[in-house]
Amino acid sequence: MNILRMLKHLMLPDWWRRRVFAADDLAAIGAAVSASEQTHRGEVRFVAEASLAVSALWRELSPRQRAAEVFAAEGVWDTEENSGILIYVLLADRRVEILADRGIAARVPQAEWDAICRDMEQAFRAGQWRQGALQAVARAGELLAAHFPAAASNPNELPDEPLML
Image 1: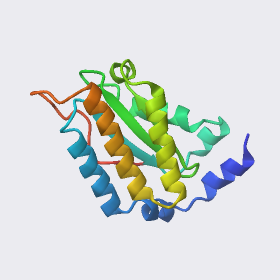
Image 2: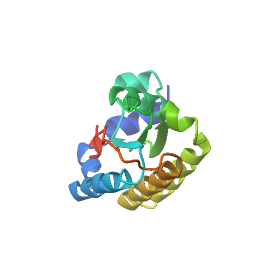
Image 3: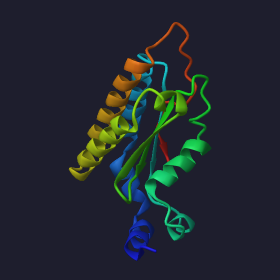
Image 4: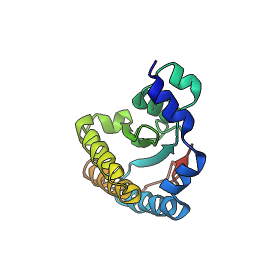
């Protein structure tokens, strides 16, 4: 068990989450997701979580494992073309994970998503939370547009608004 990580998660004040992603930041991210989805058939779900619960920390749950739990809980896998992606941000660890459903994973290598994650983390380290998130949504949209271009029928299957856990 990593005691330092546990303390970091337990001591993170709730107000910090709202400082990092204020209401206008969340609205801008939601608008970026919506605009992006006009150019492709993919579904983008942006979720940020301030810290993990004690039970998750006790199990030493990694950010990637937590992202997989959120992926399932939010039904990102439940799109008609298996074209959902989750952009998951764990604020306490300053880690980002992007998980793609099997329809996208078959066409876009994980290394592409990982590069977006690392760039987003670098922006976060510089305190550019909004900019990092908006750039990630834009780059994800470009990848999706290249592999899943928009069609005549392009239903919006997942909420565009970011979710703060």
